[in-house]
Length: 317
Image (cartoon, rainbow, N blue to C red):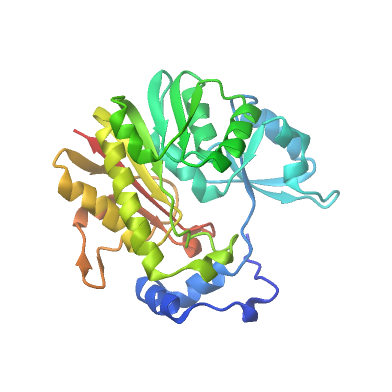
């Protein structure tokens, strides 16, 4: 799909420190142009309620669907010539037949590979895109703990779980770090950590206004606490997926490097998906990280014309 720039692209300003930082990390002009273009809309078919083929048949007379290469239930969607309306207003959306979800956001649950009858924890689940995807792959069998940490985030989470017909989820409200006192062990854990969101500029220009290096450093501390908590809650041979929609090395490679160095029984695993990926950041400013981090998935917006994302898959041995 062709990138369409925002109307007032010349009026959008980047902080000098942001430009300096990201010029060191990637091709600045490519990143800038992609970040200031509209994001392609995408949906994930909810197979708990309808087969992929059936939903395609319901939509394709009015909408153009393009397969997302890394997600068999995922499609880019454009309005057709005959009729134009917001896809979120479709009756199929209200019925929970599909979830409006950014294409790169579909990656962490795919990498997690949850199975029916397992015990799975989604540590930061709201508003529910990834946790409903996990339930879908579990076929509503087993136990899924869908947690978040503020009461305001409970409403969209509960609404989306109900709309999508998820029946194996238990919603909890607590800081992720509190799980260490629970004594519960999980087969798989998703830590989709709160982050600076620098991969989401295309849908949230406010990210540019609130970004600052001090915020990134503070978030990195919380992220290290979350990934460590998650790892300690895993069963032996369990899988943890750590992901963010940030592009900051301190929130991504540094967090995973921290865990690898602290726990001898942690192992990074390769992620093989049908998409374009960029090299991990192994050295930034005065910090160096393990070569093992090349197994992580770092996606810049310009790589696949999506949001920017970082995903790491770890196993407890």
